[in-house]
Image (tube, rainbow, N blue to C red; front, side, top):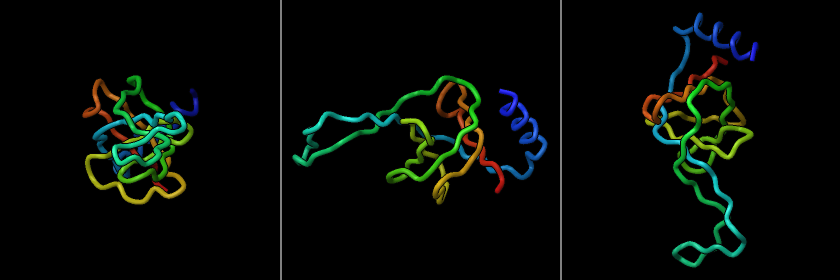
Length: 112
């Protein structure tokens, strides 16, 4: 908790150099039973369902996910941004700010 508070303080001091990305939607990856088929009869292992995350501020790392999604490392949650984010590769660290709804939520990337 102390590390998160310190990160937020340092982050606020350097606010002119931060990159903020508005979140369009939050998804949860749901694993499906073996043998589940899609509408074409092809096997599928999982799906992504819209969800919410408890309101708060979290220090997270995101990585590239399938399509336009970005995985919150260590979770089954994925983010879709309202604008272009770009390549996250093996991980971009930052602060995930979850507001009272998806449209008041954002990811603020730490400078490299």
